[in-house]
Amino acid sequence: MIDTIFAISSGRPPAGIAVIRVSGPMAMAAATSLAGTLPSPRQATLRPLRNADRMLLDRALVIVFPGPRTATGEDVVELHCHGGRAVVAAVERALGETPGCRIAEPGEFTRRALMHGRIDLAEAEGLADLLEAETETQRIAALAAAEGRISRQITRWLDGIAILSARIEAVLDHADEDDVDAGDHEVARIIREMHDLAAEIGAVAAAPPVERLRDGIRVVIGGSPNAGKSTLLNLLAERDAAIVSPIAGTTRDRIEATVMRRGIAYILLDTAGLTETDDAVEAIGVERANQAIQSADILLWLDDIRPPRTDALWVYPRADLPERHGMPEGPTMAVRQDRSESIDRLWQEIEQRAVSLLPQADTLPLRERHRMLCRDAVAGMKTSTNDPLLIGEHLRCARVALAGIVGTDATEIMLDALFSRFCLGK
Image (cartoon, rainbow, N blue to C red):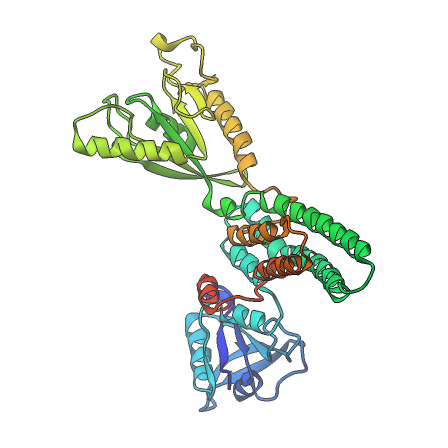
């Protein structure tokens, strides 16, 4: 028999109110042992909560949700208690003493919702992202997934593949009939429609993955020693994130600063100056700087020589110094420590580039896992074969790949990794 689980689903105490959720086959019995006669379903009612010794623990609002039309698909009871630590501990202790009840594992409530068909895997992933969202763009994308936007689109694609599969099966069933030309024309139509559907799926999968919203845009500041890289990092971050000195080679390793700006997360990286050196430690810093420059989403190049990447944003630094007045040919903009508007202009250019690297609000918020499965589906559907039997197999493989997005073939390892991101009360 499956266990009945419980956990606090509101913020950890102390708080004004603590919501303790109980779910499973013994939920009603456990709540009855504490609160006595339970109220009518979905009707909040004040009840005294008592332990097995009939000691009063608290007076709480009790709400009963009979399954299967609940968040988990099971019987659920919520106890809205006072949010003191001692109160919550006493109620949880009493629930733990009820036979068949135990404290929930992280994400177990949501996992049971998935098991009982209340949500699918794409919605569960969206909920996990929503709980971790730190910016407005992350919240919007995560909420869209949690509310089923991905699932509805995948269902539409699966329906289209199912229709094509049925049509190709019909061709195979009538392959021995006299009207061969009609069958060939139908196969040709199926191939065209299959390629059109593959193009649609491929276009959606080509958009940046939603993880980019969480991981942030990596903005790397590169150039020769003493070019003003650390100063620029501090100006962009609006804090002293890096040590600044007139001594060349002050920065010997990458220095990171996280910035949230207009709903977008940025990771600013100051790097060691690029130079030839016999110093072993400095050489390691230069190598790491080169690696960071090559992997940067946006490269800010602070140097008078041409940048190593054609897509770099070439910045003329330290333009406030008398000897550097007048920007030479090459850099696209100058920055001055004494003029904040020059930093604002640089941020505007960074933001314009960042937008193109992030999924847009009107695109499907696919994770990298979803994009890989979409690409697998597309690869099979772009087949050039005219053999109805092979076409049917390609459609089957595409159907399996897309079904994996909503969790039809989710493995226990995948589910364990996902739900470990949740708190106990989810």
